Length: 271
Image (cartoon, rainbow, N blue to C red):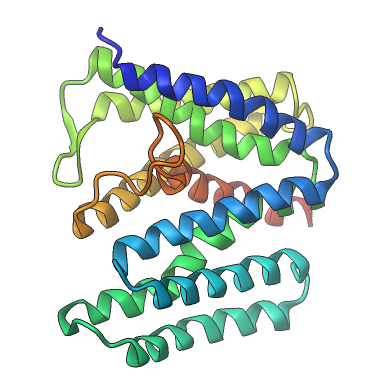
C-alpha cells in the first residue's frame, strides 16, 4: 500500500494543529476556542464564495459579513429563540436581494443567490456549534465531534487504500470507495471508544457507539456534499491554506455535519 507524499504533509500539519486545538479546548478560556472557530468559519465561507462568486470581491465580502453575523448571533444568543428565528428568516431573504444588486452573469445568478443564503447555515453556524458545545456542555464534546470526523477520515483513507474495490460515488468523488466508507464508520466508532475511556467518560458506550455511527455516516455525506460544490464549480481544492489538506472547507466538510449531529444529541439528552 503506497502512501502519497501528500499524506506526510497532512501529518506534519496535524502535528502542529492538534496540540493547539487540545490546548484551546481544554485549557484556554472559552473565548480562545471561539476565536479559532469563528476565524476558521469565515475563511471557509470565503472559500465557498470564491467558488460560487469568482472575481466578485463585493459579493464575497458581503457573504463573509453575513456569515460573521450568523456565527456571532448563534454563539452569543444561543438561548434566545427570537434572535435565532430572526437569523433563520432574514439571511435567506437578504441573499437574492444582493444578487439583484450584483446581477452579473444571468446563468449563474441562481447559484450565487442560493450560495449567499446557504453558506452561513452550511459553514459558519455548524462550525460555531463546536464553540457552543465547549462552552455549554462538557468541553470534551467539542473534541468528540472532531474525533468522529477526523477519525473517520483517517481510517477511511487507509481502508480505501488497502481494501478499496467498489466505487462509492464516482461521479462526485472518484477515489472514494465503499470499503473506505465502511472503514470510516469503524474510525468514528473508535473515536467513541477513545472518548469514553479518555477525555469524555460521562459518554457511555451505549450512547457513544450509535452516535458515532450516525455522525460518521452523515459526516461522510458532508464530505461528498462539499465535493459536489467543488465539481460543479470546477475547483479541485477549496483553498491552499493548510499544507496537505487544501483549504479550510476541505478539512471541515465532515466536521460541519458531525458537529450538528453531536449538538442535536446534546439538545435532546441534556436539556
